Length: 119
Image (cartoon, rainbow, N blue to C red; front, side):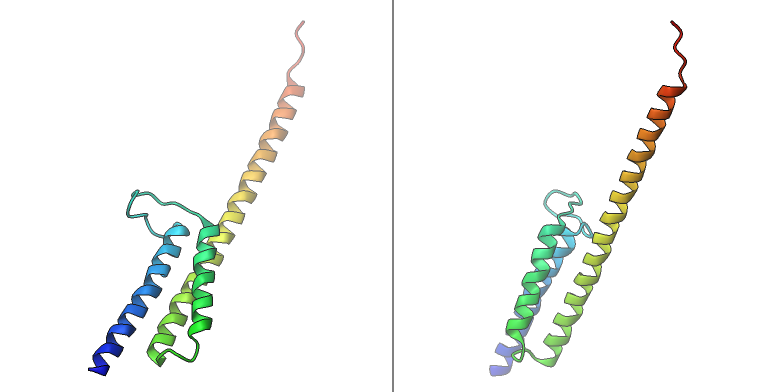
């Protein structure tokens, strides 16, 4: 009976980790929100979810089976790599927006000087 309890606890633990994993992936815009059907990005919330898993991993250290520890480490590493990717993507998009805005402002300034005064 003890083995059945351990198997159930291991399964529940993995489901808990997967719940946070799925939430963080949704928060990074990697998965569609099942309620709204939209992709919603909230990197601050994703960071909070990842930090929560980091804390949980630290608190569980020494109390997990080898399989649980490997599973946990794999999912946490995947989340961190995806988070870094999304932050980089956001920074790149911001740089492109700034470049486009600067170019547009330069073009507007240049075009206003090029129009002769006809009066």
